[in-house]
Amino acid sequence: MVIHYNYSHFCEDQFRQLLRKENEMKKLKAPMLALLMLLSVDTFAMDNKQLAFQLTTLFRSSRSIVTKNKPFIGNPRESLKGESPDDFIISFLIQTKKIYKKTTGSRFPPTDDTPEGVLRGHLIDSIVSVIIKAVKGQYEGVFKYSPATHFKKGVNVYDNKFLPARYAVEVMKEFNARTEGKALLKLTAPDKLLVKRSNAPDEWEKKILNSIFSKAGYERGSPFSEVTTYKGQKAFRQLLPEYYKKGCIGCHGAEAGQNGPNIHQSGKGYPLKTLGGGISIIILMDG
Image (tube, rainbow, N blue to C red; front, side, top):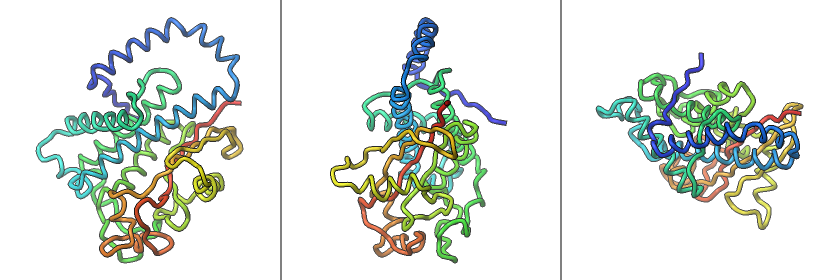
């Protein structure tokens, strides 16, 4: 059973904004439906481009909080230090939305009953669900060496750690289940930098990682978007590039005390600003 969490009321201004939006939508619903019949594929692609960027940026904003919270990575349940799970998740969402606003210059849009709003709601619900499970100790003992990764056998420095990458996988699994496959989130990386085998890039992702992002003049950090097909169905796809920052390099670097050689498929570590991979999103399209 999918549990829905509604934390909109913890941000009063946004909740009021949502009510205004809902009233506006009711007034505009009929003419909007007529207009939608006339929209081109290009317009749908533009809408999906914005939606995809909203979702990937909110996800990345939430993961950045995990990256900076070393006690949480070590043991989420013990990191509460007397704080209630509800208070923790409220604070987590407020920080996430602040980072989102700082990154994009605007607030995260409302989670309403439009198709776009529903997907935004699924992502927030997924984040909340994973954080609640983590602070209640439900992931304890789950994360150990596995042949599903490229960890060198015997490397156990990350056993039972709620790493940002593990947080990412859990949120994405929840999101993909909630959307029933209509939208999919995935982390991916160039083959040499792979850690988790299931994150291997498909042919479309390989093309973007190996060719598009390395083109002279391509704007660093800018997502690449395209209407294409996914498993035989028309789909909007976007890949948001990610580069190694300070918070990444302890795991992915090559210097003494850094673990890149122990976790990457290539057996090597890599420096700051390396293209480490990307956040891939697929939104299936009708027709």
